[in-house]
Length: 611
Ligand code: X8Z
Ligand code: ZN
Image 1: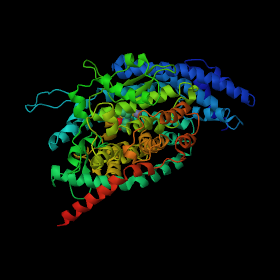
Image 2 (image 1 turned 120 degrees about the vertical axis):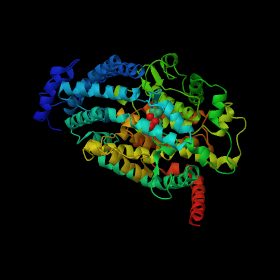
Image 3 (image 1 turned 120 degrees about the horizontal axis):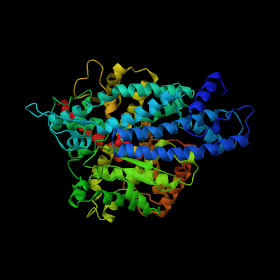
Image 4 (image 1 turned 60 degrees about the horizontal axis):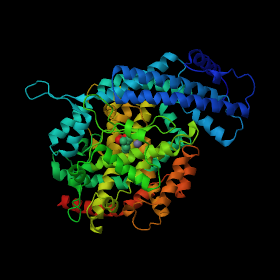
């Protein structure tokens, strides 16, 4: 890219305000050389590494102890990092077009996939808004009024989620749903300022908007990525449709014809989850009438009073059975495992690489449920990825793409089979093959609705970032996509004045974490699972395969973890699975017996409904 006057003014502005060293900005007078590029990279990696470690500590306290002070601390360090990463991105441009070793070229490309703020005021505002939105989501509570109009006890998200998971009282479900979704309009204004700034930062780096920058992070052009997403969605859509149709019949039986129509979208509050993104909690309603096992992992964990650390130990045990290391002592000392009673924290589960040595942590408000048993395996997937690629240089310490990062722990969780649970003493006797459909259904409820959900969340944001969707139409556009992709509707009327912000009731929107990653992960994890089962010499049905204790499969996985982001992801996918494309075929194979069963059920219901 040529050095334009705009870039020069940006450089000057950045140089004038840099919080740290400005050596990377040494005025480029002569033609750049390979040696210069390599020196630039090694200086930049050292500097970004240091600032990133500081930023991680700031963000950690910001999310663990939500106060105005920690918000200021988090944004202070985030701003310093942004200053440096912006300078690095601009500095990297000087070497574009230079013939370089593949590694250096890749690193320079990675450095340029970032926001750059020419104006230090904007950078400061951006960091403050980001920390503020994170805090606003973490602090949000629904405070119902008592019947007599007096103030009742406030409810945090986790309590409301429990009601959605377990209650079948439609009015109560609606109250929880509407109560939580009434909180996000509070921070819609902040979000609007935030996306405007973010777009400015993306444009500064030559992207048309932030959405385009996100779509450019997959070793292919942004438009090609959008087409890949659509191709994959079309591939798996028939399975979602079968599950959705089946859920309609069952929800209609439970809540009645007045609540659940025979055609058209279904109200979103009936799916046992605040965002109706996973439907596991509907299993008791949806399970097959005969043959399903009565086993409940939640019941076992509850009865045994399995505590949060014990839950985490089970997950660690899986990874060590594959030949991976034990988690460092600092992990156990510094992680947050349970919801503190006396302060606000962001309870949304997350994994944290604090530094490149071995300070890795999780932050999760763990409950003894089957759902959290899966989530803790998910989180440790991130942690073992961090530990796997610690040997890589700074710019390669990431997933092959963000979908890979999300897929590792879920791949492991696919190996939580009845045989495995029996092996570790959480199940007395593995059920016989008759129960397979029930198990497959339960698993599908956690995986399949995520596909349209993850797709539409980012489709919505792409249009918000591009300006195609205006702030007054946020909810209109959100629910158009909800209906189109998920067949769902808002349980209560939309705000007539367009002040609503339902998307912001989802953590990743408030915290601005891209979401297409989970769509990719839900395909990739089945590709990884199939490949690792093959590696382990397993030839039976995929849903009964567990790689627990298999060192060969473990070594194959570890090899990929150790590569980090050092190679374009298709190469890494090929190394583990022999495939070069992300593909829904493995997921469809896995659920094939369930699809047949669902279609038979649906045909029978349709015939009965006609009578
Ligand atoms: O956010 C998460 C993880 C942390 S990366 C708990 N997940 C998505 C969500 O909760 O919306 C896991 C699956 C989808
Ligand atoms: Zn994750």
